[in-house]
Image (cartoon, rainbow, N blue to C red):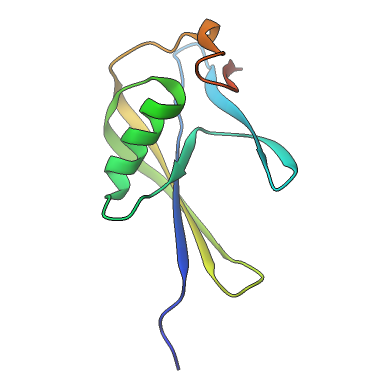
Length: 112
């Protein structure tokens, strides 16, 4: 039995305010449109933590720290490969999200 499985690693981050708003992002992937938490892929030679910090900076402009793992979701694709998503939430956000900068951070907005 072969124990090696091709695996694609991704991350998402849940950002929320005291008023109950959650930072969401509109995405279109393979002609499917959806609303998700910001995140992305883990690059070669990058830790999961470093990848979520980088992705949040790139996609929202936020600098986050002290991440807490909330969950892991995985499934097997039709080709037999595995897809894994690591969901985090930060204990600290070092800058406020400005939803009026939508042209810079496309598709990100606060949702209640």
